[in-house]
Amino acid sequence: MTLTPVRKIVVVGGGTAGWMTASALSKTLGPACQIRLIESDEIGIIGVGEATIPHINEFNRALGIDEDTFLRATQGTFKLGIEFVNWGQTGERYIHGFGRVGQPGDALPFHHFWLRMAKLGRAGPLAAYSMNTAAPHHAKFMRAPPEMRGSPLQDLVHAFHFDASLYARFLRDYAEQRGVRRTEGKIARVSQREPDGFIDAVVMESGERIEGDFFVDCSGMRALLIEQTLHAGYEDWSHWLPCDRAIAVPCASAGELLPMTRSTAHAAGWQWRIPLQHRTGNGHVYSSGFMEADQAEAILMANLDGEPTAQPRHIRFQTGRRKKSWSHNCVSVGLASGFMEPLESTSIHLIQTAISRIINFFPQAGFDAADIAEYNLQTQVEYERIRDFLVLHYKVTRRTDSAFWDYCRTMPIPESLQRKIDLFLSNGRIYREQDELFTEMSWLQVMVGQGAMPRGYHPFADLRPEAEVAAYLGNVEQVIAKCVKAMPSQAEFIAAHCAAG
Ligand code: FAD
Image 1: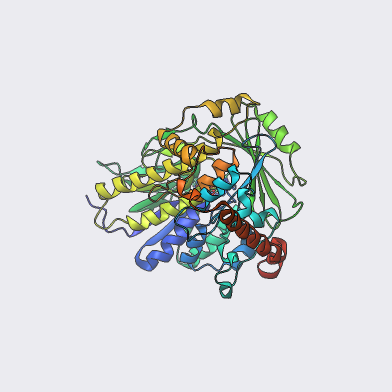
Image 2: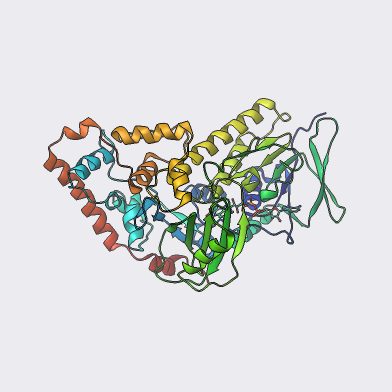
């Protein structure tokens, strides 16, 4: 029995994953395939997932989406990084900014010079040497015009915060204009053919049978096709990432419009703050093994900096990944494929890379076992590398004030992560693995930000006279400070370019 060529694609789910997939496939395939998307208004979407990382710019560009139009449609704001409060120790804060730290063009990474000067007490905080950390500190943002080539303003790297429901709506319009057919209703049953168990149709509660050659499971944590039907399996990572609950509550806007997400650690987890144009999203991610739901809710409600506009919503999740993201003629995207808590806003990015991978491995002559195995391996490696970076935040804490932080500080961690931490703690060396999402700059900012300072640094940093290195650092700091001073506030920039009506 053959399924080639793929002509009918069925996307199950109309959350961020479903509509991103339908948009990208409709743009790429044009009329070559019929695409149907099924979503249930009764079930709805998870409706959180409002902070992104810069790679989303590539997705928008590939779809030909104008940035200002997108921001207006989604009540979006700019994001230059994440501020972490109380993570290394209660009372401490640092920003993990996108973009680079220091200046390029030296044989040695900038941070070795910074480490040398920091040991001598002659360096400013690491954040003073990056546009992406200096600007959000002052609530500043701008997109540097092309004529500012060579200015450090061109170094600013941005992502977005947006309203997840509005984003799904925006992409729905995009996809429907490109021929995607939407069906509203609940899937009651999944039909598999004999003898190989490939999915041949989903059957709606209405009785309608929707047939397909290729199914994309974007049904969220239900994982209706990939798990409930094909039993692909789930690898649980909650021993490394122990948070398994979230409470979300939207609030009225308050204070300055900061171009960054804030993550404030509490006794058994952390609280997010995501500023949008029309409201601020807040939520408390916590570990049910260390805190009861009512206590977690009380902490959240006591730490809001705007009036809540809805009742708090409780969400359960299990951190981990689907053992096979692609099984038979079904590939899972989004929460159906796994979830690693929102600490570094990686889930929407994982949707995007899954879509690129589907396009790369799009079935040509049937469903090839080697293609599927490679797809699954690449997905696994990507998840594991992101996992290690997230675990780093919990492991490299000096907090001793709760059972949760004691657990995190002392827990055994993946060997791949331990190796990276050890390498940095010896002489400040950081190596980015092939295709790893997070750069050396990200690892540096989190480790230093949480107080993990290396014992040494690269010996070549000592080859230059101390005064010369001090002047070099001083110059970088001054140029950045001058640029930030000249920038508009994010609120001013949005009002001028992309304010929602
Ligand atoms: P969902 O939004 O749950 O969509 C599932 C779809 O499947 C819905 O349309 C539903 O109707 C449909 N469906 C299910 N069953 C059926 C059925 N039987 N019949 C018909 N339709 C069905 N990601 C980030 O990148 N940044 C963040 O800041 C971030 N924060 C998060 C915070 C929390 C607390 C959580 C839990 C997640 C967060 N995420 C974040 C992840 C992000 O929310 C998801 O990756 C994203 O929303 C994609 O969700 P989804 O489309 O996979 O699932």
